[in-house]
Image 1: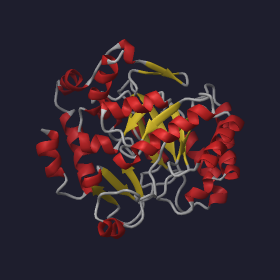
Image 2: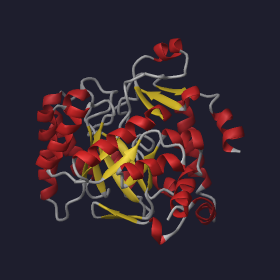
Image 3: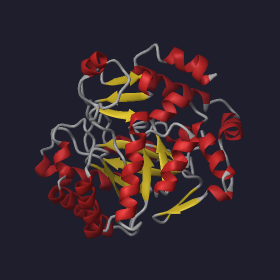
Image 4: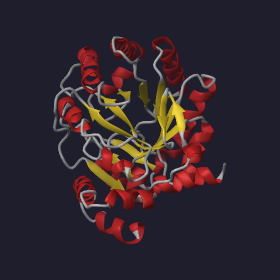
Length: 344
């Protein structure tokens, strides 16, 4: 019903407006008495065999929602009722910012993909932290850290530390995001010198806390093998806890969508099915070259249970969905978890 009726209807409207509409519908539905119980029966797969312990955290199942879907931490409770074992909120910046001009989110149905140039639009770290204090779910919550667009790269360290500080008491793990293609010059922070400075600063702040929390790095699918080798070196030097592979891509190779339409959309990060193969390649390379030295959360082109299992077989410990969730609908986590169980 979702793919035959609901999705075609939703896809008639601007993607960002639909996103806000879905958020409102989730909020409204879960205000109905008994709705949480009903959702649990329909969407949640409960089985001890699905549980994972990764970087010291216990996940009820390996399927999560990637950053970008719940930027301001307004849907994480509701998303957990759809069967997800973890939800990553953000990207969060120190100050609120409106992001890039609209339109900035585009569907490519022929490719089962999205192109976005949102630009880290969010309400800022204080607003996100306030929302997270309304936490009702036992699902693991991650916080994706970014810098404000107007912050020069030479001052970026302060922004990442500020968001870490603001979210420390309300999330379970952190992700340093320096690989999003939608912030001007953000890619420069992937250079080893910048990257080590940011990760070291966040790790040092982490050490001052009564309990250290996992710090992860989100990497770009556009990195070549030499750059991935640098990532492994940086992880060893900074002693962060893991990697998320991979972010959106600037590549437009192999798309089925009319090239004139793609050119008209112009800049933005590509997500969805076209990233499936490259994401798996990055996971496999990092796993083999590091001898499995750190956990990896897989994201990129996961639309089916088979896609998720391929990522796990390549070396990932957990998976995240975003574009696949939009195209495949609310039963995606359930289908993945049931297939994992069936292969045990």
